[in-house]
Image (cartoon, rainbow, N blue to C red; front, top):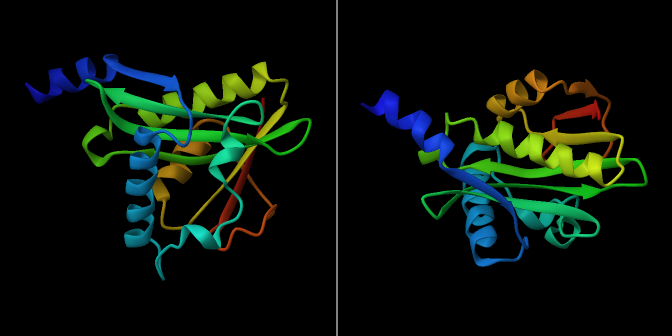
Length: 163
């Protein structure tokens, strides 16, 4: 029965643009930061990563989205404009209860489409070595590993994709 319910659950997920300072966005980001704290060697301190201020992920400089399943926020992600041609994906997270439904992939694709619509030609992102699922997702979506492009102290891998 659970094999049948998972696809139905995935189809009932709504992913919408939202203010990155909304209550649901703050709950998702807090859960994301707790997970990073647990998974990163040496923990995680959001104030040590100046590369992703939430206000940069709001229009007109970016976009933030929330995934909801049955009305409950179960995922998020955003992008910020870096310059006239490039954007950077930040804070893609899915609740453990909703993993395996393809939501991170849907969020990434939605962010890319919005960036394309905003006239951006490339997307980039960074990630930590502990987030192996993220590496696999980004590679499968056509991102290629590139040289370091920021000072994020938690990043070990940097990726880029032409839109």
